[in-house]
Every structure is written in structure tokens, then in C-alpha cells.
Image 1 (cartoon, rainbow, N blue to C red):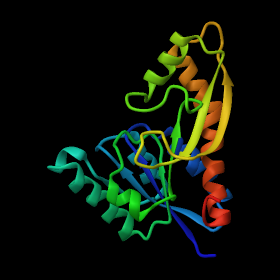
Image 2: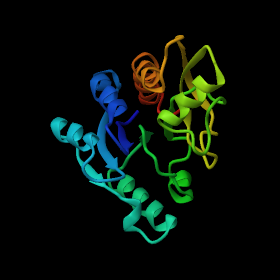
Image 3: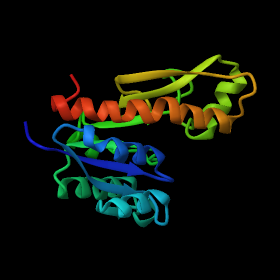
Length: 199
């Protein structure tokens, strides 16, 4: 089996990107070859620079249409011969061209146990706020394949995290990241690197 070339897509601090960087030696025949950032000046770009990983900013506002933006993302992935695309806090929608070109090879980490608290508008602290308002006793994170439905692709891995009585959205967000996201996202990438696909 050939080398698995991985691209990571980020829109912010890149904490999940860091978790992938820290686990990179466990990716059998896999290397993180590219960071695509949706805006300049984000911490994820600094993390890539510190590890010598090529990075590029592809900002939605630089493109007149969603289709042109999608083509720009796809062109970057193609230029690095990417095998696996990892959305790690990427707040843009992946378009039809990229979805088709990388079918079953784009994954996302979502900070809830899908199908709870997912879909349009559920990102970042919004997810944890909704979970607390609903009164759930267990939250967690999900790694899923990306398709044309927001958070609607096949689930690959999930991990539950207990909700504590005094939790705030911020404290729950941090615990879900530390206990679930940073664990299962690298595991999903390692699975792909070992098998060459998600069976």
C-alpha cells in the first residue's frame, strides 16, 4: 500500500490539528502534508509552521461563488496528491466537486454524539450550550465521513464524555476536546492509514 498523504482543514486555533501532529508517528505509512486554513492569522498556521508543514490560506471571501471556492480547495488537495482530508474545526462547507473527488476520504470531528446536537448552526460553543440547555447527562464527540448533508455522513468513531452538574459550555467544550476529540480523531486517521480506506 502506498503512502497516505493527509491534508488538514482548519478555521481557528487548530487544537485538533495539534492532536494529529502529536499522534503522527502512529500513522502507518501516513504523513501530514498540507494545512488548508480558511482565514489568515489563525493559530493553526503557526502550528504548521512550527512543524515545517506546508500551509495555504483559502478564504471564502476571495471567491465570488461557492463553486469557485470549492474548486480552489480541490485544486490545492490535488496539487499535493492528498489521500485523506481531515476537517478539524473547519467552518466552511465542502462543495460538490471536492466531495466527489474525495468521496469517502473526507472526515470531520463533531463535538457531540451524532445524531444529537448536529447539523446546520451546531458548531463550537453552540453545540455545548444546546447540550447543557437540554439537560443531557452524557455528551461526547463523533468522527464521521463528510457527505452533502451537514454532519450527515457515516459515523466512524464516537466517544462519550460525562456532563457534570456545574458545567458551563466552555468547561464542557474543553473536556470533550481533551477526553474525546483528541483521542478519536487521530484513531480514525490511523485506521485509514492502515487500511487505505474506511471499510
